[in-house]
Length: 76
Image 1 (tube, rainbow, N blue to C red):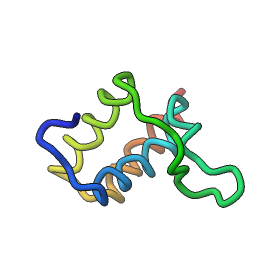
Image 2: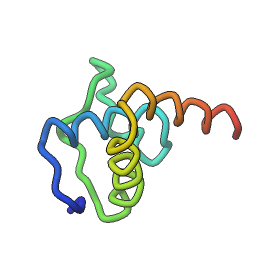
Image 3: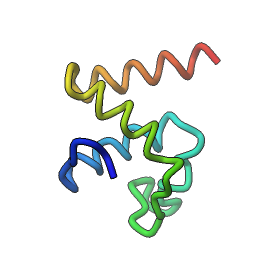
Image 4: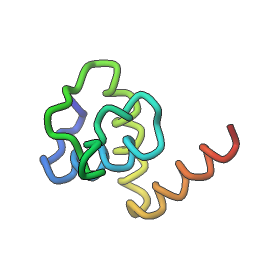
């Protein structure tokens, strides 16, 4: 659903960032392990934030993107 398409590994990396910093992705965290919950389902409402993360990833490293979302969270 992301344009252009991404690999499963890239999608996992984007979901890891989203689940840590965006409230609508909290269900993607496995309560027992703290890792990514593979049983959660992606819906169309999740695409826009993932697309933003993907767009940022084209210009920055994943660590830079995490820092961006940490700063956004501290501003709220």
